[in-house]
Length: 500
Image (cartoon, rainbow, N blue to C red; front, side, top):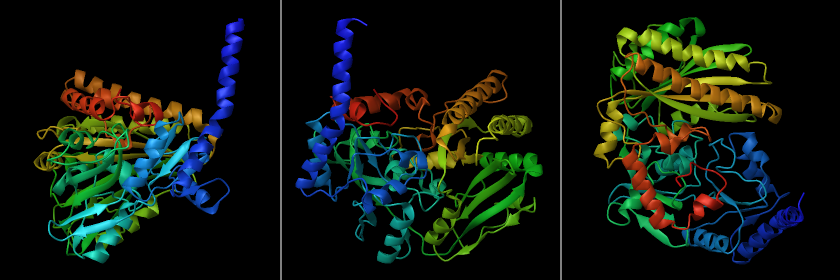
């Protein structure tokens, strides 16, 4: 090794040793300014680290956790971060499993847990919702303030508000009101220089547009003002459960539902779970009314599923029920792909090929301790897109004249020793899906259409910005250059889909 290399290595080691001290210093500074700080070995630190869907994220240990209670305190945090080289991460509900996106090792974790207000404005029927809440908490708080109103949010109550909103947010209510992000009236944002701004249809309109599907590239959102909607009635929903030997019929029912969306008040997620002793379809159903009319879910019901659907007194009750399916205490990963809906003629072959690819890749890691592989088929019909465009649009910019299925791919498993195998399986899954869909397009079995990725379901190595509408990417890039010209959030946060 050359002398210069020895010197550089020594400096690097010295800086690495100093890094925890620098982070500790910013922790002390923020605490001195009155911002709540949690340190290792305290109960609140432990509880915050437990609030991740994936234990892999909770295994990353920040030097301390800052929990600002206002936009002004968040601004203080950002300003202090400008004076040091400390890496940081922002955490909302902790449901995104990509390591580093909302978790960090040895840096500063900024928790939004104290940004938990829900303030209803009866004049315009909007609600200010803090990013530190999950959707069931937000809905319950709204119910207590003004019964009979709802917000477009997560389909499982335990999904966090913050990251979900910045990834666009797919909801049971999307076929009536578009993506969750389309229902934002105002974003309160702390920019890279610590300035607090509002982004809406009149102020900072470019930032307003970029935040609808743009992730964490522009600033820290400290409050969302959301349009609420009337829901002064009971709702219907729950689950159908099917055995694996009905797979061909289930796939055709999903294809038909996605291609001929029967009712804008209806929504489904159709999942299959595969483990060493498990191979089962679990379907989530929702209808915005006391019960669905004939013809909405008939093709699924004709398969005689185990039926746990019922009429719920409130939408909150249904969201809370769905939390049963959040698997706690496991490592967890997520990936995605987007396919146009195949027509009826080729549908059986296309859908079965998708299923077989997922099943076979999952089977290759079935010996991983406690592994469960799942695929979720999520209809993305033109009905959602038309509502989204009517409410101002978003970066994903799906076309109205094409129906899609958004595919979600999940693994949960027990131990970090299996990380590399699961990583390889994820890449095999989404890479294989992309190739299969491309081959079907080349053969004329699927239309050659735009296929963006859904950020909320994307694996950390997937190319979100490479798949999005070029005009949307340029809009977002221009906003990033304007509001974060030094690339503070690009360079200093530990995760996210980097815009460049």
